[in-house]
Image (cartoon, rainbow, N blue to C red; front, side, top):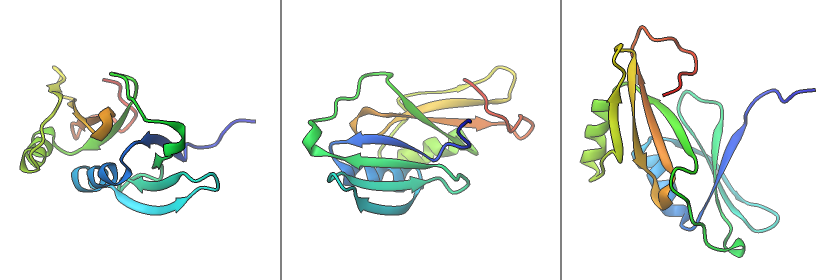
Length: 137
C-alpha cells in the first residue's frame, strides 16, 4: 500500500495573520478554509490557483515560539515571469532575497523571497518550451 497524493504542507508560525496576508497579497494564494483544531491550533489553509495541494499555516502558542533556521525548508511556486514578479514585489516594497538566476540554456530560472518568520519561497520561471515535469534548480 502506498500513499496516493500530497494533500497539504504545514508551516507553524508565531504571527498567523501577518503570514496569511503575505501569502494572499504577495503570492496571490486563496484562503480555502480556516478553523481551530481540537487541541487549540489556529489553522488557515491556502492554495495556488492551479494547484490542488494546500498550505496549512498553523499558530499554536502552547508549543513555544517558532525559530526558523536558515535554509531549513522552502515552498516552490511557478510564475510566468521572474522579471514581472520582481516588479510586483517592488510595488509592495519587497525584493528578492536571492536571484533571479536564469539557466544558461534559456529553459527558465529561479529566485527566492523571504516570507514572514524566515521561511523561503522559491519562484520558478519555465520557458514555454520547457517540460511541464518537475524541474530541480
